[in-house]
Length: 68
Image 1 (cartoon, helix red, strand yellow):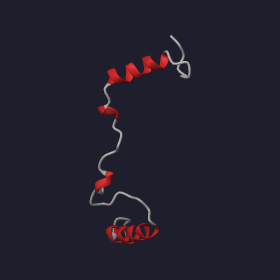
Image 2 (cartoon, rainbow, N blue to C red; image 1 turned 135 degrees about the vertical axis):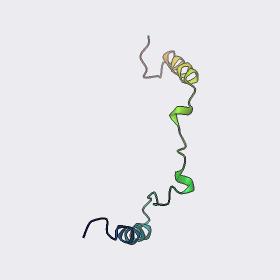
Image 3 (cartoon, one colour; image 1 turned 30 degrees about the horizontal axis):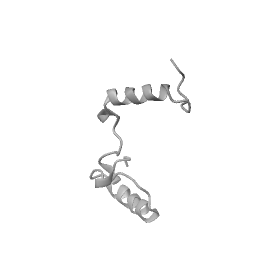
Image 4 (cartoon, rainbow, N blue to C red; image 1 turned 30 degrees about the vertical axis):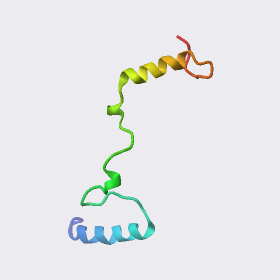
């Protein structure tokens, strides 16, 4: 038969094994609540704040950022 024949049933059995092993995965029905949002989202960073921090690092003797 075709690979997709019975795929859902095979997948459910496999997901049961992953659950038994404690493997973190995204379920077919969608992400779990803790999988919905990453704690860090680069798109939400204020670029002015980031650039100010980089500027501060320029004057810090312990910084690895080269002086400009």
